[in-house]
Image (cartoon, one colour):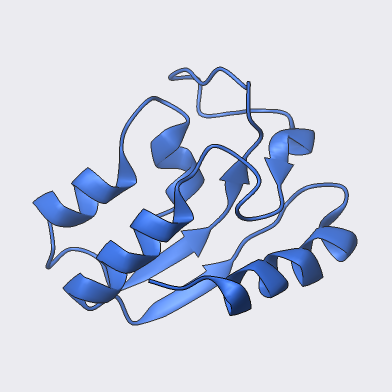
Length: 99
């Protein structure tokens, strides 16, 4: 599951993880800037990809649920023009999150 692309069209990644617990073995971790209105276009400006935990995704709930259902692999997927600055911040966020 690419978490940001579930949020973009208005879906809830936690509900999808719970609904299909045997479907997911890996997650692409990406966050969508607050205030960005998603749609069904399948595209957004790369500048809308932000540091994990600063956007619209409730990563606490996503990661807790993913752990509960046995997701094995997690990939930070930062395609923003600021990826070199954002990835260390995302790693810091992930190292401090508790669930």
